[in-house]
Length: 288
Length: 208
Image (tube, rainbow over all chains, first blue to last red; front, side, top):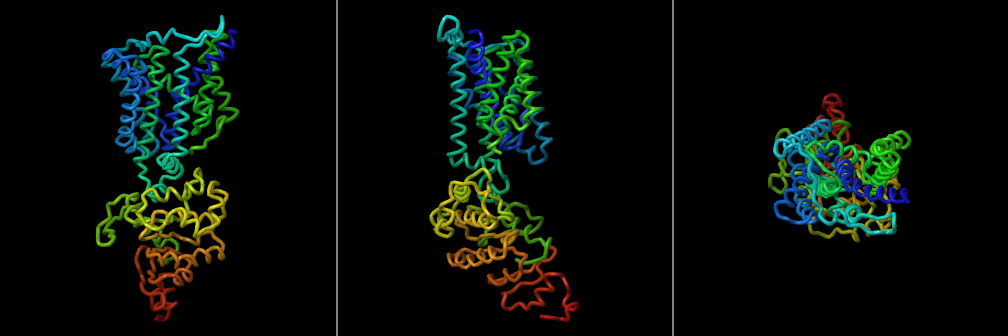
């Protein structure tokens, strides 16, 4: 029963990783941007949520409803006014710019809010759980996060496959110049893509903040998990990202079942195995 | 617009479409200056290009490719039904990908995609590139019907005979400059040849 419990926890944790990774996958799939500040934006979102929770005395879920759209707007502006400029120069410049953003966010948070670890108070939600039987109980919190992840991925997939703007996103991902000459405003489409990515990373950041404590330097460590989920699943594929997140989550939770310190390493080992045996990931790209 | 390889034909077309910024001079449409209008807004102004090499979107279905053409459509007669009337085979394969289509079929989709925007000026870049002569013939036979709907076509082509056959007015480009202009029926073959290859009139025996 210990193992069943570990598997359930692993899958649920995988939902969080997928939610966290889908923005990274989307920005790479559409704009070929590797956002090295992805993890730092998640941490920034967690701090913002903390400010809203303590300032306005609202529950953590309400704070997510404010932080996600706000980050969507931030994402649009960051793309249009910072990343786009670097895209016009070269891919290497883009990498340097997002690396720079990462450093600025980390040091800005450190300067303004100290290096102390924080966590988001999720109140009664933190301890509430279904009691499946004597040995197995599942926390509401992780189920909600998993459900949000799945809903976000399904909505994103529907948006890309059905919506007019989603079609423009796919076209711009295929061939930027061809999209321009059929009348697509590619820069706007890139901005929208970044807005979606940032909104999802904000949700993931809030969820991370409920799961574990965070500090200004926590971003890069988390970025690794997002990278691993994306690569395991297959770059540019949303369902691949979900699968990748779940596999990573399972590896970590099962690994820590073997030895408490082995969890994160087990995730890295699975990642390396996929990279060695199936470099294109489990579900190869559909987006790009 | 005819001319040899590297004469600047495609560059000219891409500049008109807004993909290149002209180094000097202006681009005017009906007397209004569109030199600084971004490419995607030129589509709304009625300038639509069928690019060299078709450039269809591989992750989109045939119909999605066509629909994308109406992103900034002007009002007009062209819509999905009308395109399917022009190319009846497309309706049956509307849901499928375009990568499995033949070169000629892909070119037809690219033309259909451009028509969906209801262009005033259709820019056609190297329509014949990489296609079998019979297929090229069929595509060219379609052009008079398009012109009859009131749109203008700016055609860039290396295949001189084909281009002169369908056009009302021809320009021959050499190293970025127009060497010769006129109605195709007024142009002598030797004259065209001289302009095309950059031979001086004396060198071809004062022909034309």
